[in-house]
Length: 185
Image (cartoon, rainbow, N blue to C red; front, top):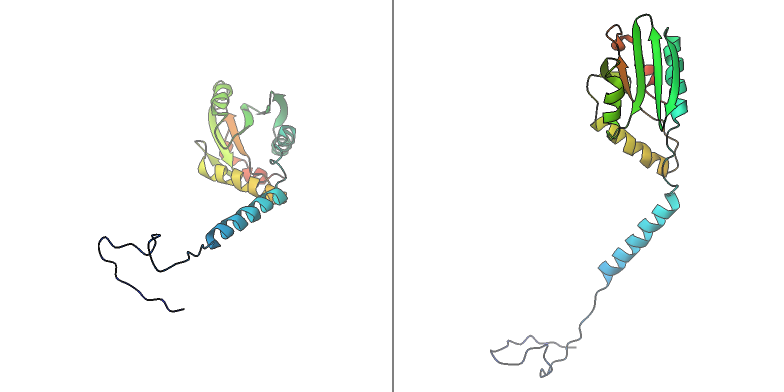
């Protein structure tokens, strides 16, 4: 077919109008629509295939047992009790008194931690084997979300809890080898 380009004058019918002598058929291109539909089906399928639900919540008793046995190994008399959904670990060695609990990486339980820590003494936080004077935020939060992603793809990741440690003035919190508790399964 031979198509000729014509120059339209003002007022003359356009090539798209019904008065035009030239018939042009519009070709509809469905490529992007098909691509988006295929991408939607693929990602939805992957989500349904890999979704196992939320990561199971950490067992507070398991954390209490691990921290208590760690403290006993280092010369402390230790016990833990579960209050609501939180475990408090009590430790004594000589004049040193400590109360330890897990701090949520998002900071949800910060006010309750500060409340029970105040009568004991100064508050420190232990994350990934390091002692911090203020609650670490970004690293534990990223670790928490990365753990969730690994769980959703079928792995069983280890946990890196943030421990809030309230200690009396007679305690040297930095001297304990907290790196032994940095990873819990």
